[in-house]
Image (tube, rainbow, N blue to C red; front, side, top):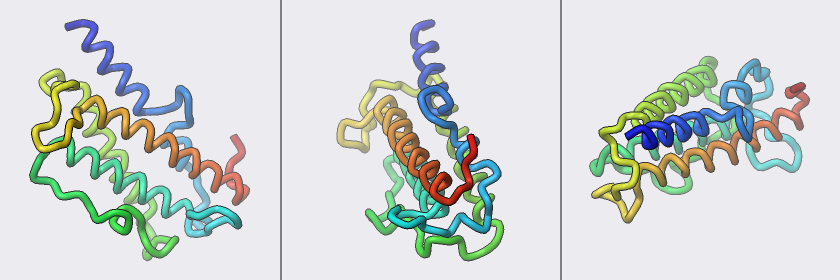
Length: 159
């Protein structure tokens, strides 16, 4: 169905960003590592907390979309890291890598025409794949906006 293919492609493009909001890549690239654990004055989260929240939540939505056997983390503590900075060097890049890997998997899940966009997930409460894709778009764009605000407050955004 050609229209269905176009819809899936448009969803994938919107998930990627860089249309109405900054992309994930532009939001995290060249972020000064010495600033990722700082909560700017008046802001509730550090860049690390936002990145991890994005990664955890996107993974949760992906796994929920794929299987009724999946168990979501406890809300809210399971969706936010503590403390505000990573415990070890390399965690920032590992989190970015994991986010991108899950993002690619979710995008392929959307583009795969054998996955019905509209059929309610049997293990859900009316959710379908289209709703989950829209949820990822909305959630990621909101928190990427917060991440850019943190970057600006730290003097680490010049675009």
